[in-house]
Amino acid sequence: MPELSELLASLPRLKLVAFLEGCGEAEFGVIARLCELNKSTMSKAMTVLEDAGYVSVRKGYAGRRPKTWLALTDSGRRAYREHLAALTALTQSAQQNFAQMQPTPDGT
Image (tube, rainbow, N blue to C red; front, side, top):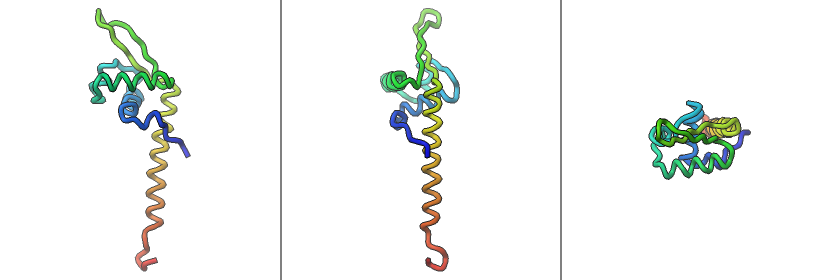
């Protein structure tokens, strides 16, 4: 059975990784806005994910303004997909086991 990722148990980190899975690379402020994360929370999530090797960070400029772009690494993509698979497996297991525990119409 796939494993849940402790790193992705945090909602801000899960949002960030899910967003990047959908778009590839995005600018820090855009991710924060669309994921409804304040910049402090977003920065903390980014740092943890970068330290874990799940996210790559690229700094540069747009005109004269400093910008930070984030992208999901292959390792981050694998962890995210395994996390989703583990959640799906858990849901399916609950559905199957719950159905088996229900009494039949004859009460058995």
